[in-house]
Amino acid sequence: MRKKNNRNLPRLLIQYSVIVLLLLFAARSLIQKEYIPDFEAYCPFGGLQSLSSYLLNDSLACSMTTVQIAMGIMLIIGIILFSKLFCSFFCPIGTISERLSSIGEKFKISIKVNRLTDRLFRSIKYILLFITFYFTLASNELFCKKFDPYYAVASNFSSDVVLIYALAAILLVFAGSLIVRLFWCKYICPLGALSNIIRFTWFLAALILIYIILIKAGIQLSFIWPLSAACIGGYALELWGEKLNYFPVAKIYRNENSCTSCKLCSRKCPQKIDVANLKVVDDIDCNLCGDCVEVCPEKDTLLINRKSKMKWLPPVAVVALFILGLILSSNWELPTIDQRWGSPEAMKKAAEFTKSGILSVKCYGSSMAFAAKMKNVNGVLGVATYVGSHKVKIYYDAAILNDSLLQAELFVPGKIAIRSPGAEVVEVKMAALLLDNFFDPMDFDKLSMLLNEKTDALGIESEFSCPVTVRIYFPANSVINEPKLREIVETRKIEVKSDESPITLNMAYKVVGRIAFKAIDVKAYRLRMFEPLNRTFNWKTEYRESMLDTLTVPVDTVQYDSGLLPYFVSHLSNDDGVVGFHTAMDSMNAIFFKVIYLDTLTNSSNIINAMHCDTLIVNYEGGEKGKMANKFKVKN
Image (cartoon, rainbow, N blue to C red; front, top):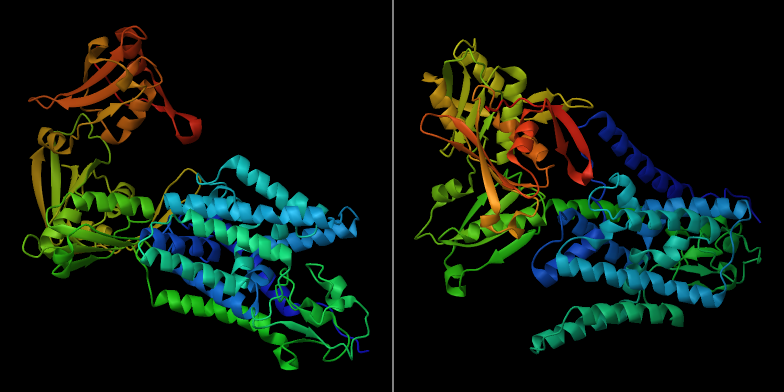
């Protein structure tokens, strides 16, 4: 017997490296508020759900990109060739569960589950797998986000998370692992169930082939049937204990001649597989972690595929698969949606227009909104969006449209008042300029924040041209000039103040040609910047128009600030009797507020008093309320 270090250092290095990287991402997001880490960027489970959605619905789920899909494909390859390496090397929940299970055993609080309970509990992960895929495929939104303990913690319980589901999952990971070894991994994890189904490769391949044959034969078959068959079949095969004679290709073999039956391998196995009594470790729970190989004191007794040089196969394979996934995703991109509503004849002749830098296209929902908008454009035959690269592709009839007209359709003109001109301002200086690399609505927002930080600009507006025309308004006495304004607009990076810490914005705008300055009357400026607002709330649609009254109130235009108007409206909506709010401007450039109310619940005096409050009570998402100063001055 030879002495050896019984610690599987390569696996520990990879496991802890993943944990450290996740902690560094989280720490960076706390230090740099503008940095938003994508904790699901390399999630193979989300990628496989999204790939299924793409194959079934021609669209990727949620904000999934080709990176996750590539990792999902690598997961499948890895399971077939090398077993469930992701579970044993990369999964942070698996790493934490292993450590917690060891603590539970050390303090003797863990229990051994009897055979019947074990078999019943193993059904849970298949049930959860069915539920997860069913709702994902039905909605194109990743259902796993609602309960995934990793995503809940990593995203700081984002709006996608259902709190009670996530807390229950976290409890099962921590308390479950302390009491029952690898409780989450063995009994709850839907990715574990999916991985097991993939290990039953012949079964899965036959199921997919039958489904394709039936579809090709013209039989309309819901995805529920193959999904149910996969989950039920996977569970049945796991209970049956089918010997995995073919897959995975790599397995651990025990040399009975040199084995001394010390049973160190069985005790060391994270899954508690009785390795010491197996000739071939083909248990469904084996993840090819290699711990048993490392702990074995006898030379060439536990070997991967009976070859001593394959000891390093698992860590090398898992790293190689990850790198291969990155390479694949960098050279290949699936569209988030690819919709074509033109006739087959029209699509054959369709021209294509591609536009990058559309930052507002960032998920499945925004992609569908973009498609809905394009459907209303005469001559557009279809669209494809790529959220990973913020790119869109438009298929169109070249007899009706061209690239310039499509750019005009894509462009969203904007206007925003940065600050209100004071009572002393009677004239405004307008600067008109052409901007390159300025197209998306988010560009407009970033430019307005830049001008707010660096200048005394009153407001900005944009309209389509090539390059885009932007007009910036300053007080007539502003010291801004062409060289200074050009320098500011072409700033590459700026820190914007926020409540907690500064946010860094990256920009790449380029001023094309000269900047033209022109003086205009302040009333003309107000007319240019005025944007009517129409809001309804408090169940307005439940009331007949004859039941409602209107209160019209003139506003001091000097104090009018359209950027603050939503907060003012939110304040008024606290009165249940107020059901609508509109703004209007008359021929003399005077602004009016029109408040729609139900006189059985409130009256004009209550509304006037609310408008005159020094402090606005503002409603935020999640039911939270805030306060801010009331800068609007209404006339009695």
